[in-house]
Length: 241
Image (tube, rainbow, N blue to C red; front, side):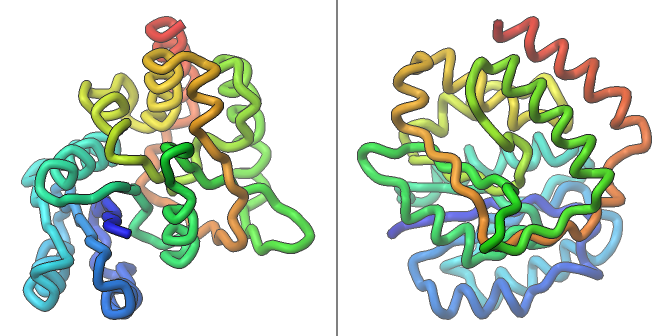
């Protein structure tokens, strides 16, 4: 399985678990990590350069001097790795590993000739370990329900930071810049649905509940996010409806 994972990084030097990434590379020789340094002002770039030096065949590093946000970092990484590596599937994953690497890898195995888009969901069940702060969960469910209505799709969780794509559909999802700084995931759903049609989109997509996900918090979310999210949702809906 030729698989690449894009990891956007902004000021991650203190919490980036490099040992976990390195151990995973050792046991998965066909895996590539594409780290996108998004204008970090700490030692993130130095940490990533060291990893790239140790694993030159498996680590790609993209350095953006200016912080342009997770949306642009993910888009840049997805488009870049598609051109540079012969991968049949590419994912993006949050640097804090709220979704463990093992979970992402397991989801990637579900990509085949019938399934081209796999996305994780943080659905809490009796037999899994999903740890979310209660207020984030409540706010998230309100937003998720609205997004599902907008998409006219029974999607539980569009915002989990683990999604895997076949190489074939990446140009459709990432060719054009996104409208929203934070809700680009929603735009991905709209783009794929619009391009392939709702029936085909449903046929080649899978939403898979994670076995483990831990809310590690994200201080990078701006205080004004709560207000901007509604504005962004309206802009997205107006463009893609």
